[in-house]
Image (cartoon, rainbow, N blue to C red):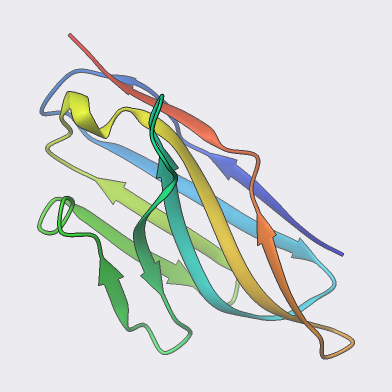
Length: 120
């Protein structure tokens, strides 16, 4: 089993910054793709950013230039630095990891979600 623990959500004013973290643990050999998704009230879950093991990244158009995804492979941890936050960024943010387990199986795991609220 692989578990994800997220942290870093909260309430921030428009224009502010937050940093989300997600640590993978358990029977993990390697975290292949690590990503952040978000789901706003009444909307579908959407991909925010992803990063593969080589460090190559992908961003949704709505966050390009404001959000930065990074990872620490030694700690199996992914981060999302969010700057210039706007009310439309308010959502529950979910960590997603596609991992190779210690038994060399592929496994997709979701975090429990962390709420980010952007409001004055």
